[in-house]
Amino acid sequence: MTVALRAHHVLCMLTYVGKGYSPAFVRNFDGIVHRLAAGEEACLVEGPDAVCAPLCESEGACAHCHGAAVRARDQRAAQALGLLLGRSVGLGSRLQLDGALLARLRTAYTSGQMRGACAGCDWADLCTGIASAGYEGVRLRMPVTVPEQN
Image (tube, rainbow, N blue to C red; front, side, top):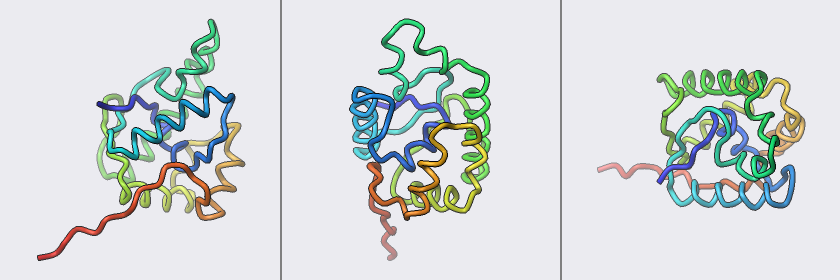
């Protein structure tokens, strides 16, 4: 199984602390975090994804998900992810958000290397505060494992 995510939602995962648009949104986001922590891969998609699902239940509520600003945020996030990973990242790309990758992403996010993707986001100040506090209270946590050496 994979979790369908927009590229910019991969960045949202880095600082998610249980805040969201509604209780249903938070419950859904917690479920996504649980799936990723259990080892499911993220698969990058365009348009509404697993995170958007609770917002899309009411007619017309997903208009935001199709907006030009959100699509541009996805493009910037995919580009930043690609630069960090050293490979092209786009629709259909799969990411295994293990402890090592999360650590790399969070380091890049804190340094500002990934922050351009967040331009214009209403949650940017909250995310900046969480990153500045060392990601205290984030819900997606996985240990960084060091490969055994023979």
